[in-house]
Length: 295
Image (tube, rainbow, N blue to C red; front, side):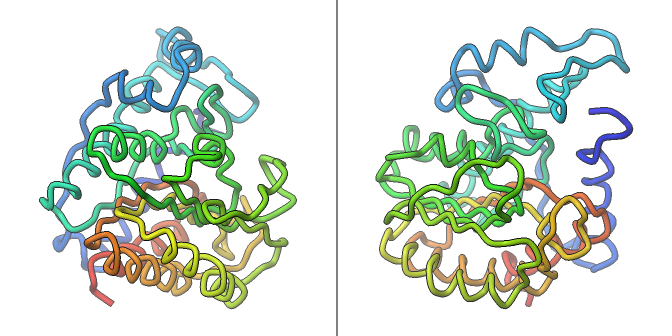
């Protein structure tokens, strides 16, 4: 989105570098993501929202079209967005088929701010929401859960499934903070909990234990999707929280307990935020070690 923009290609390179440093790169199976097809995107996004992106892709390298002050399109954005969503869809297919136990999609652009009708906040299409729709409508699952630990509220995901009893969303997010949406009322399928700036791992672990876990177990999800944002890390100045790598590993392990209990271990995790490159890479390593059972 421009050399100045924090949502940069260096994010994925930082993850690769830390996987090599941690000596787990060779233990992971890598797959190239396909391009998502438009009917799959259209399950969660309006034709107008899709057309706004497709029809405003610049043709010349180095030129941009601004959707908002933070969200820009370049000549590669359309394919990048389709490939990000395609990764989430392909991972969903592979996990449900039993081909792989779980998956982490190292993708850009992120997705959890994108609502059915609007791209915003670095996000073009909502990768996790598209994958959840696919699990429900193509694979016939009846109950799924979304866990979001990005520092920002996943407003687009919450809007996508508001009132849908099949989908539980559980998150924490710094508040007040971007996107400055009002927190939703807590319900059996909406456990999105605002926390103040400077919240650290001990408080997050408590809310996960007291709020997320009972709701997840009551919902009995057949599959769990994770919006894996790592910008709540204490070194990430895009947010103001105080998590560290061990907190992300612990959260992942708690989610895996529910997945093992109700969902045959089925988890698809998709990268959202995380903009301090070192902290991002180290946190993804902790997340992947937990998913792979290496801790």
